[in-house]
Length: 337
Image 1 (tube, rainbow, N blue to C red):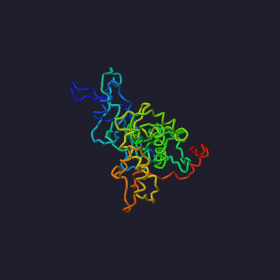
Image 2: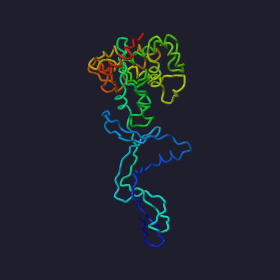
Image 3: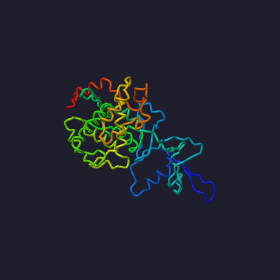
């Protein structure tokens, strides 16, 4: 039905059957992305049905390549209509142009920048890849990196930051995060291979050269590459065939993984730990093996012992369950040659 309040006004009509619409209020930075000559792909993700305990989480987010915006529904007491131009007529009257309301919106969706970390989600989604007495103990999840990211309500860039931090990798159709024990073993082999072949790890070297040198060790190649990317300097391009490790970052990483690889209820003699740490570093890096390098990552239960600080790294191994057994039945345990 069309109405007109006074002469010269606009005829307004309301459709008999209103459609369902949601109004989304876009912040300026999203508008700029959409108006760009080559706008990026935007996506909406939702919280998984059975999420990890993540504290403040976004149940639905709009994602740009590197940012996430939480969707929040806000009720309004004002009458908000979605309209379109139309022709309206009553009986045998001549149709006249009107503005027709095709939907009534009682709520709008607002976007709020969400800066959560992907680490908790990835820790929950990725099984641990552990090496015990030369054998792999891991329960595959059957998910690729891309599929894993698709179930995390954060942007691709935010997921990538957590993936790199955990030294996560893909192997045989699944995605994993290595245990501190595994990282310690892989690093020891990398350091030994570099020493034997004369590679300077803090200078550019071909990644494939190290992979070939470690071929007989049986480690997944993607795990070694993930470690190199984790240990590269922040401004280094890690997408090419070259690798170069940051000395300070690597020295701290080696010390932390050595501590975390120790069982939670076992302490290191501080002197023994420092000696072992030095032995796991290139000769010219040994001076970095001092406690201030890993400040905040350890506790001192006594004047002569040291232990990894709780929460710095997870040294637990996957528990044997039905999923783990099925994975081993399918692939078997891979013995590290």
